[in-house]
Amino acid sequence: MAYMLELQNLHKTFNRGTINEKAALAGVNLQLKPGDFVTIIGGNGAGKSTTLNAIAGVWPIDQGSIMVDGVDISGLSEHKRASCLGRVFQDPMTGTAATMSIEENMAIAARRGERRGLGWGITKKERKKFREQLRELDLGLEERLSSKVGLLSGGQRQAITLLMAALKEPKLLLLDEHTAALDPKTAAKVLELSDKIIEEHHLTAMMVTHNMKDAITHGNRLVMMHEGRIIYDVEGEEKKKLKVAGLLEKFEEASGGEFANDRMMLAN
Image (cartoon, helix red, strand yellow):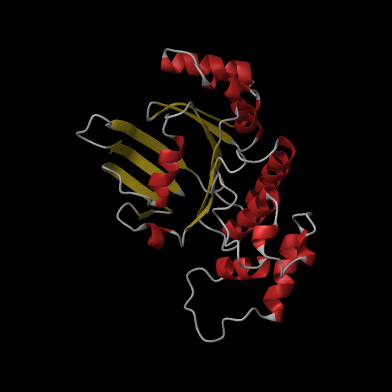
């Protein structure tokens, strides 16, 4: 079977040889089929965001390989991987340029990977397309194309970042706790938009979350990490039947312990 993502035996240790040495990834193996939407949960330091950073090329892995659509990207720089990846971060301020307008931000995303010529202005055709795409967000932003992104709320910025990340239909969309900084109502709206964009564009996606309920509700597959390893992997009908209490039991069974400080936060 042709996988969209293959992680083979990923290892990463930070501050090796010092008192602060930390094994963040300890042999991660994961295969995603085209169109898979996997949610990743686990306690603090489990390796969730580290896995996404490894895929994005934020720093080199110590061992293993990362294949995207059959191509080994393990040795590529973060910049070179960006052409096949879309990413939305936890901080709504990270994915957009605050001093630029909505349409300027969207134009940069739409032209990612293209050579910049003299005709860098936004065309009427592009403006019409951006307006149509923003209308789908149902946030009234289609009438604010010239507004500076820095004037928008966190939820509005995150919705635009999500739209921008999917504009070029990346081979893999990485959502790194992208609703953690939002209030519950706004977070629910952004998650709803995430589902819609992933489904409409037939994207393969990974979403890191601290919220067990969200992990169960969204996506077709759920992966649980603990101490740099995947300890539980469930999909399809089995995932649909999961409840938070059952997921906590699975964690305790697979890890040999129970959630400490994270337990209540994960159960919310």
